[in-house]
Amino acid sequence: MTDPFSSDGAKAPPKPFTVEEGNRRVRSFVLRQGRFTPAQQRAFDALWPRFGLDFMPPGSSGQPRDFDAVFGRSARRVLEIGFGNGDALRYAAARDRERDYIGLEVHAPGVGRLLNALAQDDSDHVRLYHHDAVEVLEHEVADSTLDEIRIYFPDPWHKKRHNKRRLLQPAFAALLVKKLACGGRLHLATDWRDYAEQMWDVLDATPGLRNRAGPRGHVARPDWRPQTHFETRGQRLGHGVWDLLYDREPGIANGAS
Image: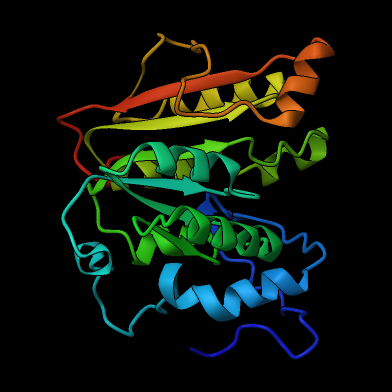
């Protein structure tokens, strides 16, 4: 494996991959690289071959990733986009070993932290990408193959002039639908009411998705998503949290607009 980090532990920022949104190109992430500790560096060195997946650039194989070969079995699969420090992914995977878990995160310290946790848990049914979600979804994940996609507390870009940078835009929602299997589930959570409103605007209008709680509806936090420290603190301050569950409906052809 080629060490993705330089000798001083600093990683060059990944290229800001984009998804087409009308005539505008939208970044799927903005890199905020925090302090990368020696323990996290050692995790990459020692554990990446076990739990990591290197993105294969388009054209290198021409085919989506064979996840049956990666995991050594055929199982339903859950994808979490932007897993942060990995607490929710670790929690869910430890309690659900019948399904395979794939995590996507561009923040290197969070990836390193989760690598160590997965080794402690012996969670060999989990694999991680340190790469942009759009590129992975477009080139590595075959259509109609994911049992569930989870996106918890994406960057709200709360200033109105920055709302266009939010991840949940129509083109990205359509991409998620393509990757979900029939009957698959999309689960999102946010603690910004304004972002919940945008999620409803986009997802309730996306062909192939049905809001489980009805139009502009949300549900109580499901037991597979742990409550975060910041969520607990926010609720004490009177802040809301919105969990949105959508089911992938049958009869909608992939690529429908």
